[in-house]
Length: 153
Image (cartoon, rainbow, N blue to C red):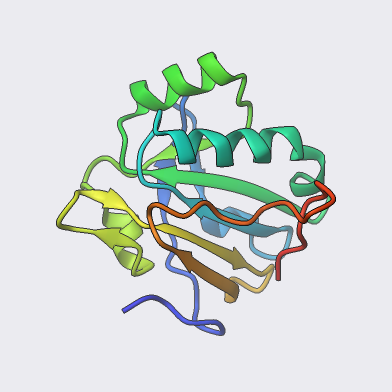
C-alpha cells in the first residue's frame, strides 16, 4: 500500500550519481522535497521525464524546494545517464538493499525489480503533502499544453 497524504515521510539516506549521500530528514524545516521515483535509467519515458526536470530545474530548485529523483539502478548507471544527458540534480540509487526506499513509499514493483512511476512532495514538516502514481508506460504530465511546468502540491 502506498503512503498517503498526511503520513510521515519515511526517512532515507541514499547515494547520488557522484557518490554523495542525501538524507531526506536533513531538509526538514528548510525545504519541501519533490521525490520522483522512476523505473529505469536509459528508458525512453524516464529519460524524457528527467530531461524535462533538467530543462525546468529553476522551478524545482528554489530557496524553499528541491527535487530528488530515485530509481533502483546502481550508482554507476545513474552517473552514465547524468553524464550523457547533462543532469545535475541528484539521481539517487535505491539499488541495495534493492528497492528498500521505493518499498517504504509503496512504490516498488517486486515482479520487475524497479520503482514505480510515482511522485511525492514531502513538506517542510516531513509529511507527505502530495502524491501521484502513474502507470509505468505513461509519462508524468510535467508540462501543460503551453509547455510550462505544472505546479505540484
